[in-house]
Length: 338
Image (cartoon, rainbow, N blue to C red; front, side):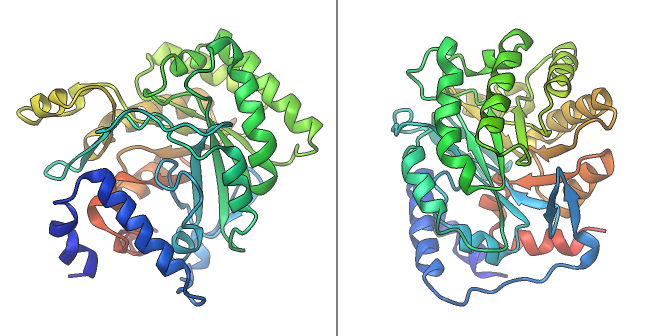
């Protein structure tokens, strides 16, 4: 039994956000050591996606390291890439607490964090000290008080600061915890947003930097098809699917009643797996190989990740499973990949 599994019962007695903060405090102490382990990955795991060379297809999804504070640790654990954020242009505290709940019996997390962010200035400064040899993506969002009509201004403001410090950018228009954000996925709103971001990318001389779009799992199939066509026509580099779900139907009774009693928020973890996979398959069918897809949502084992890659995903990301399984999960997944 590894150390994390031995300590997990004690960790899980803490409030989830308190446990998160404690883990990050300990992680920061680990990052202070000059010689963290640097795993070597088999050459067979390497792949080139949207022009970037990934040492492994497995990455850390956005939402865990919002401020890019533990990049050396993620590299030492063996992740091929890390997506930091979501980063908003201006600092904001996020939603009132409690806003994070875990259900270990089913590997489920409910969160309504609401883009708590130190702001793009602070995160950009920290990224200037990022470790070499780790692919880092920047996940961007708008501030809560910014009207939908002015969303592009927020994404552009964050992009100007974060994009020069990372390897790729992901636009988060799919979190359920910022009012109105998911409306930006509608084709009539999405097209000008993507055009505006691509124009800024060109102005900044970053045409070669990948620009990705992260989608929700709660879209109707025909809406997914329409979004795919807008994305392909715009000239962006790829899609990420999926974000958290609002669908309480992914949780079986009697746990569903307990989850519903906790209130609003997005669900992630093992119960999301079937729904997320169905959405990814729909997107991959609509894409017809025209853009790469990064799989995210409900992945928690080598079998899950390999299944996503076999379905046609170019890369895969985990988050919730790491909370329940601990750091050794990264090694176990890599050992099980073909």
